[in-house]
Image (cartoon, rainbow, N blue to C red; front, side, top):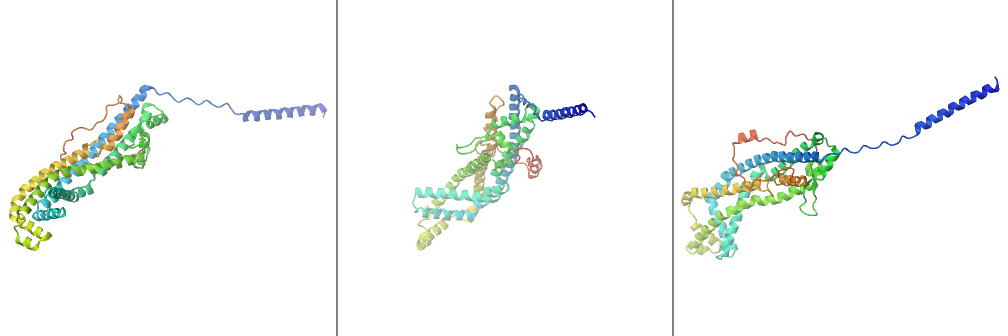
Length: 383
């Protein structure tokens, strides 16, 4: 073969190698970066609709939580009344209890030096405190073992949070708002305001995305603070209403002691504490006389407790600061403030809360099931 043939062959091979290298280098060259599409702009009117929807969801969740709490508190009140009739009234009006109270008043006076005036007032106060303790042990504590107002408060608040979180889930899609922007909106809405500068607060996003809500420190602190204030609500009405009963009983017993103070020869012979008790026993009301007075004593105590128990229910259900719905109200108010007053009418507690009507037990159990059951556990904020 001629030299020109080999030269042509080498040139052809060289051209192929060069073309292959250029092809490889062309594939390795990075393409220019694509520009990220800007986030879609959400109009002010759409955000207004979102805020209105959040406010409406809060009101619906509030209504459900309130119905749940009122149903349980009606049952609690019914049990309190039953225990008063079955235990406290028979105990207090019994003959031997009245004799025992006479001895306690005597001891109270002895403990305060047996003097008049201040000694009598001290005996009245101590007897009132004793009756309050008995009412707590015989009525309020057994009732709380079945239905505890503090537990009801926590359950109602949890139910409100769960229902609200469930309703928030579908809002981004319904309004055509990107979820990232919707979540930023939730982070800007307050849900729990700290009681002190050192205490934590929480946004609506924090509240509905904590699983369960009790793990959120601000939420736990809110319920603990309301629990502390609620403990004073229960004791207050009963103490205020029992004090006049204790005062009348103590003064009656003190008068009996004064009448018989020097009349008992046995008391004078024994002397000291035993003599004072003997003297008091000699002046005590006899069993026959007590039996005649007992119906009036029962009616008086029953009327007094009825007023006190109704006041307890009204404060536990209707008090906006520490009642069983106070946690719901606090969160709902914070959300309303965050959304702005123009987005919805503010939710308010009725100034007057009517005393509950007590349905029969079977009807109550049939119609007041636990509304926290059946809710999906996988949505944000579930407790």
